[in-house]
Image 1: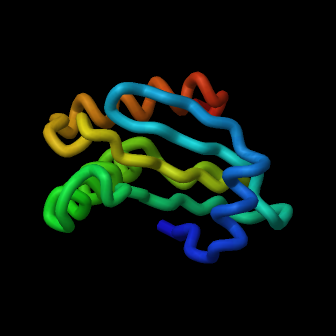
Image 2 (image 1 turned 120 degrees about the vertical axis):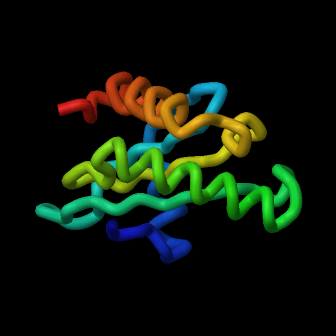
Length: 109
C-alpha cells in the first residue's frame, strides 16, 4: 500500500480534495498528482485524541479498514482521519463506515 508522505502532497489534498465525514472516521479524497498513478493513502491521528498509544491504536484500526476496503483507489490520494470513536470501534464497524464513505465519494467500483 503506497502512502502519502510529503507535506506538499498533504497540502494539495487539503486544498483540492473533497471531505467526507462519518462518526467513526473522516476522509479527504483528491485526484492523484500524476496521470496513471495507482493512488496513495495516509492515516492521521491528531494529538488531541490522546497519548501515543491511543493514536497508534487508532491508526492501526484505520489501516486494517483500508486493507478490507481495497484502498488505495487508483488515481486518487486519500487521507483517513481518526476520530475519538475510532479507537474503540470494531473492525467490522470501521470497514462498514469506510465502505459508506467510499460509496458517497464514488469510489465503490
